[in-house]
Amino acid sequence: MSFIGLFKISLVMVVLTLVGCQSTGSKPNDSSEYEDTLTIGVSNNTAFLSGVLDSNLVTTLTDFIRQNPNITDIVLVDIPGSIDQQATMDGARLIRKLGLNTHIAHTGYVLSGGVDLFLGGVERTIGAGAGVGIHAWTDGSGVKASELNMADPIHATYVNFYLEMGIPESFYWFSLSAAPASRIYFLSPEEVYDFQMATQ
Image (cartoon, rainbow, N blue to C red; front, side, top):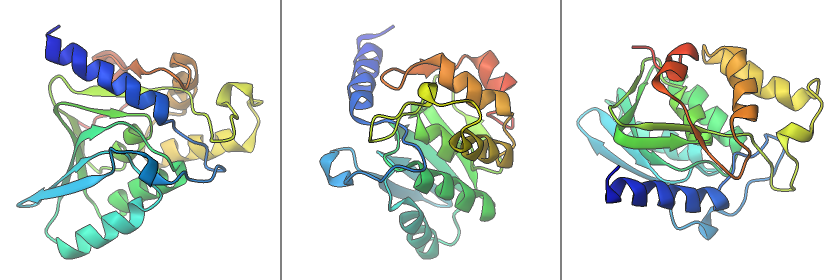
């Protein structure tokens, strides 16, 4: 692996110590404490997203698409995670409702809640060399998914979201065991296929 590739992975791991996929019951943190705030660019009918997904995601996407009604595709360039899981799920639902497609940029990455936003696409594609990183969630109060009974309703919230997006329930349970909240597990191409992450 090149020095740039190693540096990028190291940078991602630093960000992950700050950003975790929170439960839907947790309160969003103040996004101002993160330097990597969400930015959106546009070229023709394509929007390009980079940065941390925050509690304003739905409003941000709605306003952006209202100003750029010809958008058909959303390219996720570098998404290190989310600080408001409910907002992220709602953002994915908005993308699906609007009939937009999602794509992970060539050598880009989506981590944690970024994966959930990606799943909102009607058509989902992943560029060569892109990373899809998952881990078990924890909320701002220290509650960990692994500490909850399997029958806890919060699990159903996630499972129902994935089923709604056309992703098998097994993906959720796999994500809880793949890596703790403080680390990231990158899906292999075979796992991406098995969990139906990409539509083509």
